[in-house]
Figure 1 (tube, rainbow, N blue to C red):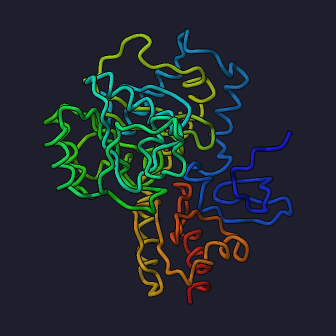
Figure 2 (figure 1 turned 180 degrees about the vertical axis):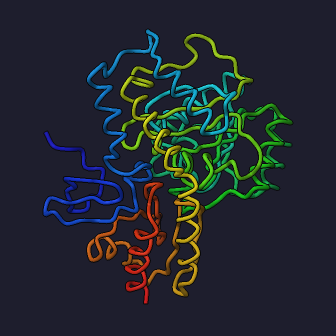
Figure 3 (figure 1 turned 135 degrees about the vertical axis):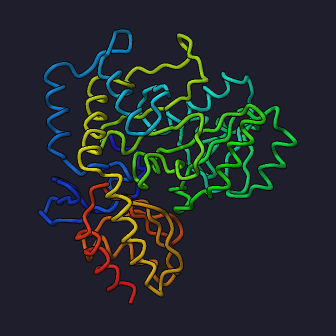
Length: 376
């Protein structure tokens, strides 16, 4: 049997990792500013994280949600404290797509409606509902296509208001990334998020804040949407939540009243997943990583804006997009193969920085030095 060839692969095999560094099979060290796509939040093989998982595995690795799992209660309590959403409720699942899928389903159960507003440039996942609200027709299979999704221009308040005026009583939910990741590190404006909140209140629609990539402290606030000063009804999260262990969740406002069987999952909230997620939050608290993300990220953004060759620097905290002209399209590849620095990308020419939240200023300077050589 062969692997189903859907991933374009770099000819690199990672055999060891620690902190913000990884090593390949030839023992070449790399600086990791990609974090496996914003997944590594507290650094590779963090000692507290490894101990938490090892200790739990030596007790019980898995049992189903048919029994009490105290770790779930502990996780919900700590997540409420760190996120500032103590009165919210937590449903645990496995991936960002599954989190968004369940959030959309929850909204439809809540108000009995079918229509969903999503935005140009959006990426919410690859499962049926999540991909239907994703703005990439290439990955939407015919079976995923639905007339229930309305795509509107990102950050366009007039289009949003007009759509609600015309169809408000049919709209179940609005789903939006606080900062679009795959879409090129494009940030929703404060006023746009505030407008979503007010219109959802007016028409009894559900405001879903997709925080899968832009959440979990990456921008200096727990959810990137927090900077707008208004609360969403549902926050979805994954990626950095488990530092590499598959775990995801949705944080649900108290106005939603659950009923048995409404949502479900086999692996979500298992013992190992909860241990991983608890370890992440504990390290985030102990090392004040949201503040570090804000400080190191602000430093990187300020320095990157000094390069005349850069078209635009976007993002906040340690979620940064560097838009380059076409003649510098080679920079990402050379960062990896010449300077041994992993970064991400968004088409056509945006370099994405999504490092661990404990990235140091020294690591930032290492990247800036290499970047400077390549763009000058």
